[in-house]
Amino acid sequence: MASRMNVIAENRSARHDYEILQTFESGIVLLGHEVKSVKTRGMNLRGAYVRVTPRAAWLLGGHIAPYPPAGPLPSYDPGRSRKLLLKKRELAGLLSRIQQGLTIVPLKVYTRLGKIKVEIALARGKKKFEKRAQIKKREAERNIRESMKHKA
Image 1 (cartoon, rainbow, N blue to C red):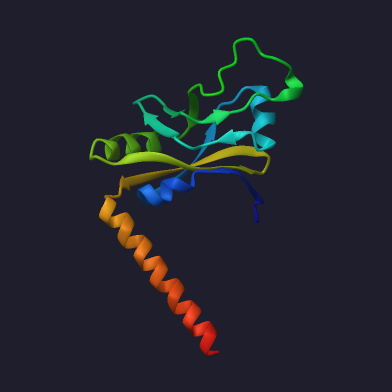
Image 2: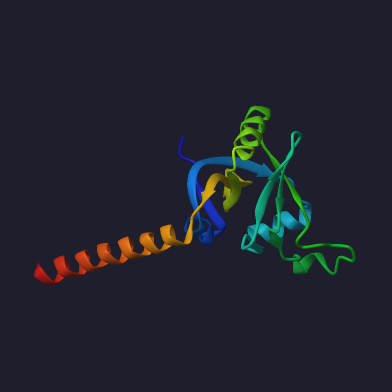
């Protein structure tokens, strides 16, 4: 079954700052006007992170802009914590891995079969020298591609 995936927001800095070890798909609990705002690309994951407790996982720091047609909402907080929907087994596994010194970061928000999903990743923070080495490797590969293109 081919499922259409429409990426809404992406946390590009996460792949630069962290080594991604494992990814998970989770649902997210949103209010009605938040759903409409997210589907019109009104979400930003920059600076967002995931906190896991024994009972639930929470997305913190994700920003969902107010949906203009909904009118002014007096007590709406665009940066509020939002609950992530994970299975108990996944939650327990993530909690044990966090205690080993790993972290959980949101990678992207997308729709699949009409539902809004969040891709989160179990990750290890990169050191500064690892980031520089990655940039140097990428530039070397780009130079090789360029030289091959000029030879052909």
